[in-house]
Image 1 (cartoon, rainbow over the protein chains, first blue to last red):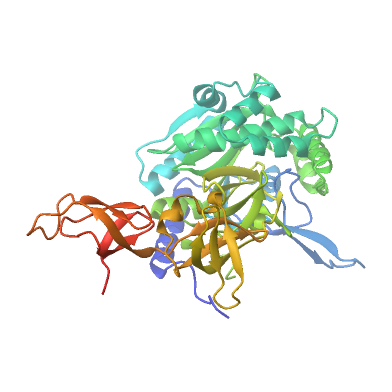
Image 2: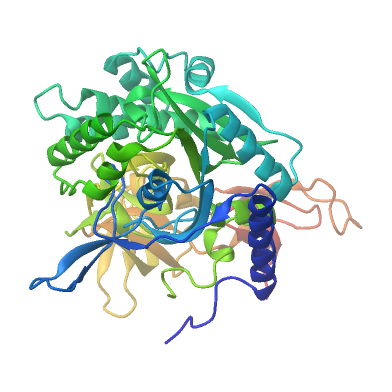
Length: 334
Length: 189
C-alpha cells in the first residue's frame, strides 16, 4: 500500500501541539472547564446542509441495532451539560461531516467549542478576538454586520431583497448557472423554499463577492446574519437578524458562534422547518434529538457559544495552504 | 457517455458544457459551514480554447465528453483540409481550418502532431513544441553580430514570421518554439 506516511511533517505536528497547548492555557487562565462528550450519539443535527456519518450498534436490551450518528459538532451534548448546571465549558474534539473533502475540508476534523454563561454575543466576540490575537499574533480584529457588507459590496439589502434581485446579482458575477441549478433544485412549485433558496444565493454571493475582500489584514467578525440563517442563535430585538457571528481571516471561515437560543418551543419549530426543507430537497429527514429538547425545556441558562475549526486556525498560524499539511493523515491515507 | 458528478471532477476530466467539450483544469470544493456546498471549477473549452471559471452546485452531474488525444504524422494540405496519418495503422484523418487554426504555420511534413478528437473528429491540432523550418526571406545581417540585439524578422517556408538574430541568413534552417513562436537556435546539421 502506498502513502503510508503522514501528510504533515513532524515539525508541523510539533507546532500543532504547541498551539493546542496555548489554547488550553487560554481557557485555564479564564477558568473555563475542559469537558469531553460522546462523539457517537443517538441524536444528530437537522441542519439542511450538514450530514452526519452513521454507525449501527446494538445497545443493551435492544433486539435491533440502533442508528448512531457521529457528531458534526459537540453542541447539543455541551448544552445538555450547561442545562444540568455546569459552569463555563470548552472542548477540543473530533467532528465528522459527510462528503466534505477539499483544500479546507477533511471529513474528520478537530473542533474547539466553548460556552460562556451570561455572555452576550458581543462579549463572546471579544473573547474569540482575544484568542486569535494570542494564537495568530494579529494586533486586533475588525467587525461588521452581514447587512452592511452586502450593501457595500453588492448594493443589496440581504434582509429585504427579493429573489429576482439576488438572481440578477448572481448573473452579474458569473454565477448564472449556479443560480439556475439552485432554482431548479429548490423550485417545488410551492413558496416553501423561497427563503432557503434566497439564503443559498446569499451564501454563494457572500463567498464569492465578499469573503475574498474582508479579513485580509486582521480577522473580521461578521455578525447579525438574517433570521432565516439563525441556526441555533436567538434573534435580535429587530426580529430580522440573528445574534449569530462568524470569523473570516485570509479567505478562511474560521468560527461560528451564537448567543444561544434557549426557547425549547422555538428550537423544535426550527428542527421541524429544517426537516421540511430536507424533504423538499429529497434528503433524509432527521430524528429530532429529544434529549437535547428536554434539556432546553428544563432550562438552558443564558449563554453564548462558539465553534472554531482548530485545523484551520493552525493552517493560518503556520501559513499552510492545505488542511492535510496540519493533520497527520488525511482521509485518503486514514 | 457516462455522467460525472462534481465529486468526480479532477484535472484532465472532459465534460460537455453548453454543447461544447471542455477539459477541467482545477476543481475546488467550497462549503460555507452552514451553507449549501458548491464547486469552483476552472475549465478550458476545447474548441475555442477559452479558459473559464464556473461555479456549480456540489453533486450536479455533467455528461462526459468523448474526447481523446492521438498522435498523428502530418502529411499535406490540399488547401481546404490538413491530412494526418497514424504511422502504425496508416489510417488517415483530415482536419479543417477551425481545428488547425493559427497552428497551420507550424505544420512540417512528417512531424508528429497531437490531434484532439471529439466524437472521432479533430477539434484541435497541436504541433510539436519545437519545429525546424527553413528561412525563405530575411534581410542580410551585419557581419560580426553574434548574440543579436533586437534581431530581425524572418519569413519561414510555411509563411510564419519569427524574430531571428542578425547573423541568421536566408536558406538556413532554424528551430522555433511553437508555444511562444520564438526562435530557439539554428537547426543541428
